[in-house]
Length: 130
Image (cartoon, rainbow, N blue to C red; front, side):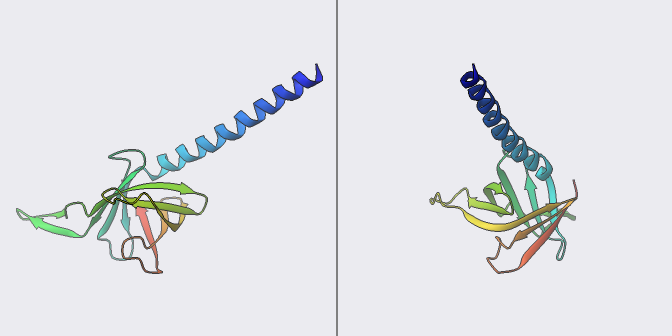
């Protein structure tokens, strides 16, 4: 009987640990979902969750079309995954399956990301606008 109870308790513990991890990842994806604008130059925009749960669209700058200021066509789509204090990006048109890891911090309606756009050592700050 003790063996059964120990096995049952271990199974419940394992299921709980893996469930919490999945909920945490889903929670981050839900927090990211929406439109984010770069705070310093206000021209780079990230769109999370519009194409797929783990894709982000990068738009850079604006252009005037028919007298209206509109975002430039998409610069690129990236597949992403998060883990603790990092985010991994892989351009979806890339033939490589390797991802690049960048610093990542999500707080309130702001996010810090290592510069995956120009590959500098600068930390980019984005704020959620939608």
